Length: 121
Image 1 (cartoon, rainbow, N blue to C red):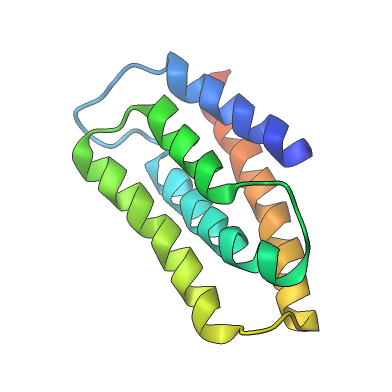
Image 2: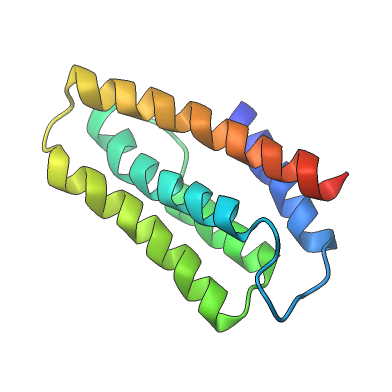
């Protein structure tokens, strides 16, 4: 639930910033957030039942950000990198996979909060 609120806050920031021809200052953080969300998309069904649709959340973030095609591709690519990285390492839920999920979720919350704090206020 906290993460959902953080994502909404980031979405609000993205909706209020003007479109730029160059990467916005939060692009690197958005790419990291996309990568984390891809990892969570793989790990969640593996280790715990959850209602979060990480792929849907990522699609919503991209839509709200309204990136140009290059940025859109980089964000989608980062999501896929995160998914692929964990799909190569885990076939079953292990203590390490559970720990990775917990840490990634915390990092996603921090990153979303940081984007909101630094660029919305």
